[in-house]
Image 1: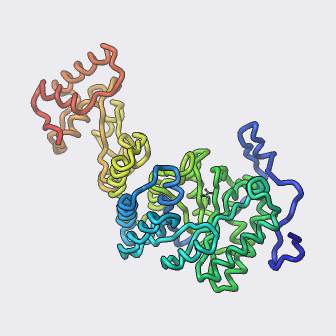
Image 2: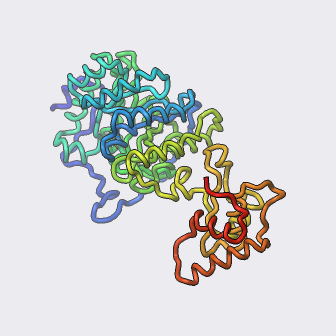
Image 3: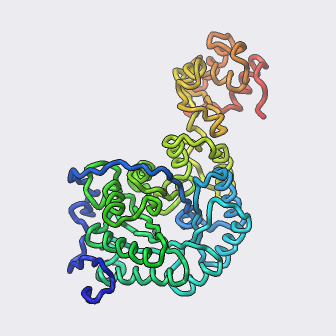
Length: 449
Ligand SMILES: CC(C)C(=O)C(=O)O
């Protein structure tokens, strides 16, 4: 298409050869982290929130969920949100009859939060579907990097931008608010494609009297949180640029990250801190390849930033049990806030500290906030202190009746534990084994519930 005939105010910068940012993404080597020294101010919006894509990006990486599983998980989102609107939306496919049945079932619950939003292909029948189902906003894919524009879509930037803007117009014509998913933004030419595209989207929205939401998709997890990092990888610069140069307000900016470089949580928090109101998450970080940003992590990040006391994090553990039971999902025991061992200690020196004051080795009251009391396990390093702490944990005795590490019972059990490792054992001692041994020596510990 001849860009001079374009009806849009801002033009993509057409190039003969794709800009694949070979200097940052050499492919034969791991990517290069480059700094140009540019910095942007922090700008945490007053109102920040979380959006959910468990049933879209998350489900893509798992076996298909049943309607019953989706509605049960939706209930967990609602319970955790606890009518605060922190978990503001949840995104659904509308492709199959089953997808639509799940949406209807969740809608019938009649809850305010999370609101239901969709993800569709940009064709007339999908637009009709969104309308029919009375969903006010839908996500639409707009891949932004030359990897996608040249190599996948095989188009020029101008033609591609025109195509996306046409889709925006068609959605608006159908009375639907489009949410533009700028795929692969962290490898895209910001000034040559992203900025003119968003400026034109803003103009179309203004004409229609609608604020169009922009989702910045870090498709391969290449975004970085560091000040001074160069575009297109700098999250502060991307968000600051869209706010100040394209005039997108914070409330219309959403970050969608992936965990390919272990940065997904920090990146999402960086997006909040630099002016995007929304961060997109999935339960336990399920999602393509290394996954999306975990919902549970952002709930805790939010609590740290805003000290909100109303969300109910005690449902996280139940949701995890549901996930394991329903999907055969194996949760890493060390996974923060939800894994079996996240607040578990085996080392005697830690257990000794916990016995004296739990806060020494537990950074907040995980029993009250997450319904996850500190756990003490016994292995070859637990020593007398670790075994005494384990016993006190199981007995649930009052402060005054606590078993000391000098108690002869502790010494007897420790002798038995040492014998196991002398015989070549390598695994931790289970609670059941320890209970049996302790009971054998004393009968003082109550049985497992
Ligand atoms: C498909 C796109 C929108 C996406 O989810 C991503 O870029 O991660």
